[in-house]
Length: 511
Image (cartoon, rainbow, N blue to C red):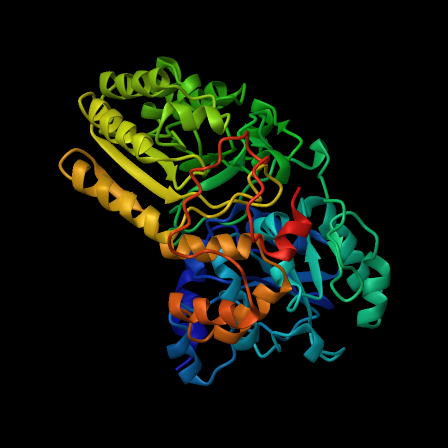
C-alpha cells in the first residue's frame, strides 16, 4: 500500500496553485507537523514559492504523518507531496518551524526521512539541514544540535542567497563559505551567537499564499499579509522585535496579489485594526462576494464601520485580545486596552448581530494575584450580560527579545488552581478553552533554553510526555520551577525583575 497514493495524492488533487518543477538542485521544504497545520502557515507557502522561482532549483513539500508510529510500520520512505519522491533525497532539507512544542517533531521528522537528527553525525553524503521560521527568531539555540544552517528573520532576503550557494557549491564547506556572514545566517558549526536578523525590504512584500486547499486549518482561505511588524509597545509580544520594523503594505498592493478565483481571503497582521487600509481592502473584497478572515483586531480601535465590513465578509464571532485578566496587568504589559474598550466591542458585536465575542487572555503573569482573577471573573460576567462570551486562556510564557525574558514561569500548580477557579465560577457564564499549564511550562523551557534543551528533547522524542520532559531536564541539571513558582513579588516594570536561580544559559542571553 503506497502512503503517497493513498494519503498524499488525494490532498494534492484538491490543491489550487501547486508548483511542479524539475531542476538540478532539489529542495525539500518540510513542516514538522501535520499537513493541515503546515498549509495554514503563510511563511511556509512563501518559502515554497520563492525556492521554485529560483533558476535551477525545484522545491517539494513534506509533512509529518498524522500517526508517525503507524507510518513507520509501513516501512516506506516519507514521500514529498508533489511527486512522491523520497523526502530525504535532496540537496537541502529545509524545515519551517512555528512552535516551541514542535522541537521533538523536528527530531522525529529528520529520523523518519532517514537523515540523522544530530548534525555531528552527518557528512557530505547527507542533505544539508536548514531550519527557519518564527521559532528561530524567538530562540534558535535548542536547534543547534540538529541544524546545519539556522535562518533567522525574513526568508525573502535569505532564499536567494541560499539558492545561489546551492548552485555554486561543491561541498558542505563550500556552501558554508558562500553564506557565512550574510544577515540571518547562523551556522552552528562555526558560530556561537545568533547573527543580525535578515529584514526584507518593503519592495519584496506583501507575502501571500501560493496554494489554497480545503484541507488546511484555514480551509480554502487565500492569505495575504497586510503588515509585517507591529507599531504597538506591548511588552510580552515578539511581533515588534521579531517582525520589525513595522511595514505596512498598500491597500491596492494587497488587492493586486489576490487572485480572482479566491472565495475566502485572510488578512494577516499583528494589529489589523491599526492597518490604515483594512476598511478599504475589506469593503472591496466583500463587494466582490469574498468571505473575510482576520488574524487580529484590537478592541481600542474597533468601530461600527469596521465591524460591519467584517460581518459582511462572513465573520460570525468577533475576536479580540485582552491579554491580561485585569486593568492593572494590562497597563503592566503596556497593552493599551481598557475595560471600556472591551465593553464597547461587546456592545458593537451585539448591536450588529454577531453570535458572540471571543476574548483571548493570559494568566500566570508576574505580578498577578487572586484579585486579578476576581476582576477577570466579574468582568466576564459583565461582558456576558451584553453578548455570548468565549474565553481563550493561555498561561503566560516569557520569551527572549522581550522585557520579560528573565521573568519566571508562573508555576503549573498556581496556574492550574486559577484555571480551576475560573472554570468553577464561569462555567454557566462563558465558554472556556484553555491551554495546558504543563505543556506551557515545557514551551517556556524551550523558549529560554540552549543546546542542552535540544539534547534533552533528543533523549525523549520518540516517547514524549510531561514526565519524560521532567526527567530529561533533571538529568541535564536544568534549573526551572515546575509547580509552585509564585512570581507575584514582581512589582518593577517589565524586564527589571532579577529572579534567583535563573539558568546560566538564559541569564547570559537576557536582553
